[in-house]
Structures are given as structure tokens and as C-alpha cells.
Image (cartoon, rainbow, N blue to C red):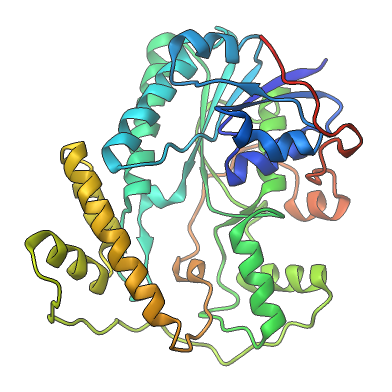
Length: 360
């Protein structure tokens, strides 16, 4: 029996690729939801029909989720910190209140809720991690209150055809030699094929009880295994540089920008505290959020322009993370098997480009 999976946030980097992967599954009817036709162009070009609308609007949310067996929430609102919090909360409310009573709701969170480590070895929770942690608590509470089945899946670093980290790893391999902090350390990386398999497992009832799970490769791969796999994919030998260590960055107290707000932005940049600052900014009024964001964007642009003149060593920042002990979702197939068999290749239906939009 065909299962209908509604994908919220299908225009995002992860949602887009997973939608194209599921579009080729005979037992799955995938229904991607995107706000506007411009945001759905990649999907429609690849032959996948799309529903357009705003899931944070209750009147539209019922229409968009009609007939769903599974609602997969990849949506990530953008904008100021306060706007992100408000919009993500509204979306979660509507996935419970406006989806069919029998539908399973899947919220995609992040392992960043546990804190991230930067290049200086400091650990903190980013704004992104903070918002996702709030979202986890919200959806689990709503599911319990309303007697609904909900899965929260904490994604590791996401790799795949459309994913930034994959392009970076392949560029490192091609440029060679590759720098590792610890090549045989377990990574927290997850390929999109495993994300697609997780949704199929939930739809097919082979994923175990609803609840909170971590989603990384099955089983976890080391960084060496990841780089060896990608090297084989691009047909390039993997050359390793000497192991490197993480050392604290130099800090400076010199502030050249006048004004309290600008000085704060400069300090945040130089001390590497952007994510911490954004967490605090989320509690400020939206108007002040926008001013701080504008100041930060200006300072960041100056910094990036200045950095163009300096050769930087290449290091995948995801390697700063320690390999985490994870609670995996039951019923998943081995990631290597999925990738080697190409069962979840994100090809869509290229023989049917620009299909008519879906209507509910």
C-alpha cells in the first residue's frame, strides 16, 4: 500500500534532496510543500509536482497536509532570532493541530542541541541549536497532550549530492593532502540516503516506537571512511597530511569600530562568540535584532574581504566535533548498502519536467 509523505521545507538543502530521493520509491507518494513557485523550481524542473502554500497559516496547513500518512518537518525559518523562534513554533503547532489525526509527525532536529565545538576547542550551543531544542520540547509535549505519534530525529552533519559538506570534502581530496584531527575518530555525519530510509522506515512501521532519536550513518563512520568513500566517488586518491591539533585562537582587545553596538559586534567576531550572542539576541525586540544583524553582516563582509589576501589551511570544521554516543532509530538499513545500491539517488522524474502544480 502506497504511503503519502508530506515534506515541509522541501525547498531547503536537505528537504530538496530527500524529496527527490523519495520521488523514485514505488511505495511512497511524496508531496513536497514549498511557499512559492520560485522556491520549488529545482523540484519541478526534475519532474516533481509541488504543493504551494504556508504551513504556518492554519487555514492553509490543513489543505497542505491532507491525506498524509507521515508529515516530515524540515522547515527552517530564516530572519532575525526572534522571527525564527516565532515562525518555527507556529509551524510545529500546525503540524499537530492541522494534520490528519492518524498521521505520524517527524520533526528533524540537530545534534547541535548538545552543543558544538569551534576551531578553538570551545563548546557552546548555537542559536540554531537553541531554537531546535525549544522545538523538540514543544512537539513532544504537543504529541503527548493530543495523543499523537511523533518522532524527533536529531541529524548529524548532513552529506549528499546537494550538501555543502560533501562538496567541501571532495574539494579537499582533489586539492590534497587532506588534514585530519583524528582520522579514525567516529563522525556524526549522516548521508541523505539514511534520512530518506528513516522516513520510509517510519511510514512502513519498521522504525520502532515514536520518540527522540539521533540520526547518523548506520553504523557510524569514521572520518577516514567518509573521505575514502568520497575519494572513490570522484576517482581521486586520498592523500593524508600529518595529523593536526586544535589550539585556542588568539584574542585581542583592540576595538576599532566606534559605538556600543558596533563594538559589541566586533568583539563577538574576534572572540568567536557569534552563536552565543545570537542566542541572547533572540530575547531582544525584533527592531533591535534587525539592527544588530545589519551591523554583523557589515563586519563579516569586511572580514571576508580581508581574508582573501591570506592563504588559509583547509580543515573540515565538522572534525572539531567528538564522535557522539548516539541512540539510533531502529529498522534502518546500512548506509553503505543504500549508497552502493543507489536506491535513493536524487534523480526525480527528469522525463516529466515542469509538471503541473498539485492542488488540495
